[in-house]
Length: 420
Image (tube, rainbow, N blue to C red; front, side, top):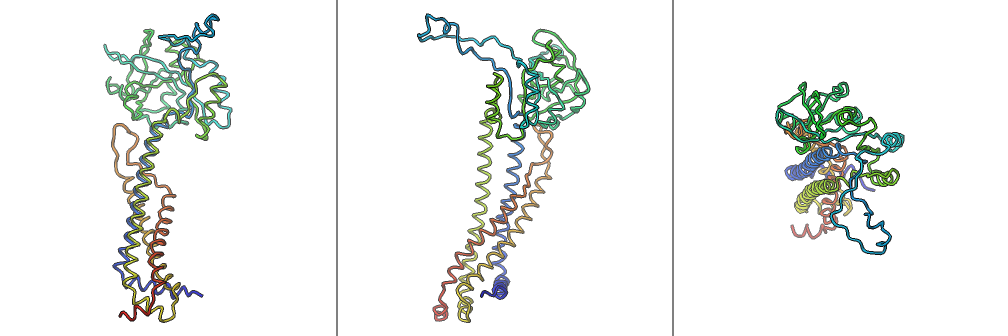
């Protein structure tokens, strides 16, 4: 029967008598795990910030009418050419409305669906922003502002003013940050917008919107849905887009196909709309985890080398232990215990170091005009990373300790004593 008290006492004695080697091995684990925690926390936090920058502004399903050519051209309907190969050049898009037919019933249907977290109507209008004699082309989108805040973190992109101010003012506008800078306008000022039909409307700026994407901020602004409908001279049921947020993102693709067939409308899911972005995000995550795992493996090899040298230095001790009645398994357990103690101490210190560095990075100021709402570097201190870190520390030290301790188990004490 194994006497664990004696084995652990011997293991402790070995570790304390070779304090330099013990500290070196422990620090190898500490810095390996610490670097892993810091890197994976920072990189995944950065990736999450980039994902949110795009995905928060992208609906899970986007419903709209797409302008496209008719599938059947008039020549195809002519019976005399029914069995002929018809080639039509310079095909033009068919005349169709941008508005969604029966938009309000579709909205009611979506809001009753248990899988839908929310559905918001929008109306997009092409306009000109008037600044003195200058006309700047852009887009004005009518939205249900408080629903956008609830579903899309819209408040995070308002750098001046508030969504409540837009809700409370019928003739208010959230002006794009790029536009506001070009026209030297701020909250409280008025801006004139002109429709493509030539009508001019004054709107009061109640907030400045900045998405972090310059191409959008230079043309995009938001107003209440009813305001844009009135400016465009359209009825209250005139809606050009419906944005849908789901409880389960995995349902976006099948539900978009279902809605297309059900309502004869174009439905684009979030994965299709952001396929290139998703690929880039996956590659960044892959690189992050590859580098992190490499750090852990390098730390494991360091532990193996130190324990291997420790066993060669302890050859005489091994011979004496075996000569006094310790079995090969007991000797192996002594060195395995040393490895696991190093792994446990080094792993815990590594978690503390990693957490401390993560907190330090999280407090560093991150000042960029592209992301005004982000004030410090993003860090994702997820608990699972710490679990993975300590498990890998114990696992790597177990493997690193097993190989040299297995050699120690097979050592013949007679040959060592004779050699001395």
